[in-house]
Length: 246
View 1: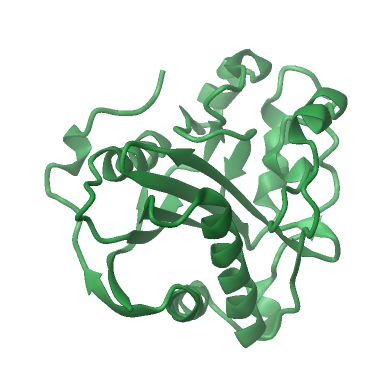
View 2: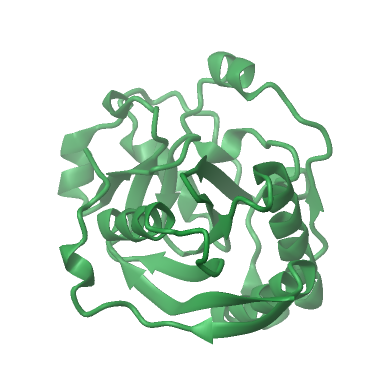
């Protein structure tokens, strides 16, 4: 059993959200407790993977629409962040990144099961590099990696990782609306394969965002043998963080 640090659900800009995740992971020491935080986005935003080409997106349209834009410290492809639940886990290197990916996604499946949803996961590892070359979609949700969570064979939780000196950062988006499809409105080309809407409709089970967060905390506690969550608060000078963006 172990303790984890948890931060209260909060909404921040894309740049600040990415700065927080990067800061927590880069400042993590061998003696640090694992960290869990859930968060949202104000304003709505697009984030792209660490190695993704930003020139694929229309900066003028993004600016005119009041959409925020940031590069993630992790890999993968672009996500439009609207009405969703985003999570971040910062875990020591005592757990390898594959196990962290598997355990966290199995926990999310159990969380949704408690709320009445029957989700599945990708059992085989696909060659994502080959898929990226063949797939014209810029969206993170166009392909599923091993252990990623799906509904009706469509990916509904998109996660990415980065290994730091003493920690693994894993963060991801849980799709509870079809807002993620808005990404297609901001690419330079109009050819994007993400056209079908698959998401977890909490209202269909009379559930709210708070219910989902509670269920996720409970399931993660079980899968990671967490003894207790130690609540932390965001620093008053949070906005002075060096932003992890270009």
